[in-house]
Image (cartoon, rainbow over all chains, first blue to last red; front, side, top):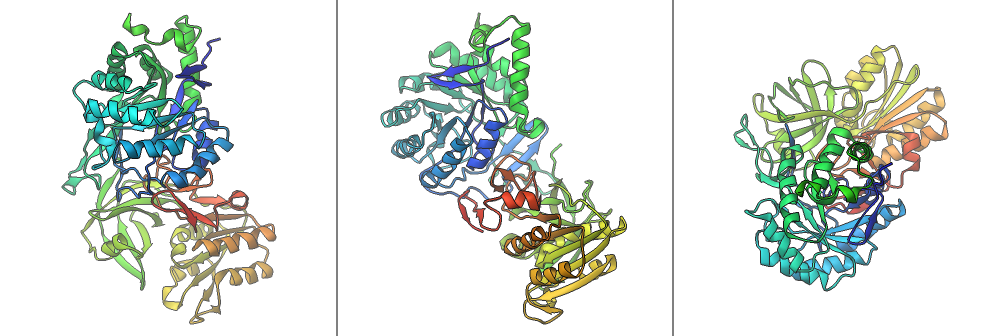
Length: 302
Length: 258
């Protein structure tokens, strides 16, 4: 039997899958349900200081090999969100709080508030590719990644995981900056900035024109990013981007990730995807002669 | 291929002073109670009830905001985007059905009323509206069975709200099933009536939606999603719900009074 328990920066997980931020995580009811369906942890919707409606529809476009979205960071604000975290906790969930703001101080204020709700870690959404004027584009500036991470680290006691953008020349540089800022782990990757056009209407398919691409289309980009990051940093990495099977998860693990996040695959496989990915991983690890997840982390670097 | 189909409108019908039907051909299925996500280019994308299921599909929607108002100005040949069908289906259980519709809620039920009748069930419809002019799909329901009418102002039929009319019908006749769609307070009352009499009920709920495909969490009802777990819920499900009749989510996800 393969032991699928894992641990990231002191956060114990029953298995190495997490719900990726932005999917079924605006409400505590849904987060609890996803946890009960098998996720090792759930990452909340990115939450900011104030309630935010997000963009008008269309906000989501289904494509051949992925999902394009520009939802625009809708969230009820960090104060209201306490109810949702409580509800998820009542359902037994291990919750990681994703936060954003317009500057480092706002990130820190939201993270500090979120950390009082009992979340096990804070994920910094530094990299939403379609929200202008918010700190979410700071993943374009390595020194800002370092400073934002440090500012948040100074005010919370739980581990801090900056989530990085793939829309940069060299993502490993940004991971090193995050590590310098005191990051306890790195989440990679956020969505790829992308666009779809509806030819019949001669216009972009999203109301926001630009969106973030997720799903199978970006998996190989994510695996490469995790591989590059793990060459340069010592903190654990959480791999995200197109994981829909145990084999996909193992690509990330062998590239160096300690855990993976799953989002878009909920569309194709339903909420059972977490349980299925875990079982598939166990079977593949066993075939390959591994006894635990940590044994397989980063083996592709050999 | 993208899941959205861009289709020209073939016909636009004003059903009531505030409710319009849009007809088009699209390569998609559709069963009673399901909905489409409808893109009104440059305005919005909204869930709308499939009111016609045949070769020429139809959606029927109340003009209640900027996007539906813009759509009301469309003419034949103008194009919309459609994707779906989404959501679950009204299921026939037994041989006699009471359908209780409030206002534009009839749009979600009319295909079920017709289908149940074609499957041999006795279908009695209680249709309610503010006034006689706002009654929707009364002729179609009448062709599928018996129709009773309630108007808030008494301009036609029973003077009062449709749950009170439904209560009279439930007292008069033993139905094997109730289906309902309309304002949530109305459905709350109808679900309560049906459950008190031990009659199985299915209710079609409405919530703000972004994705329609079960990922964005905008339409959550407790730990369920109206887009994929509904939009039709059973009386048992709704009896356990904290949100039904009391809370909905606004666009930011805040839980606010329904």
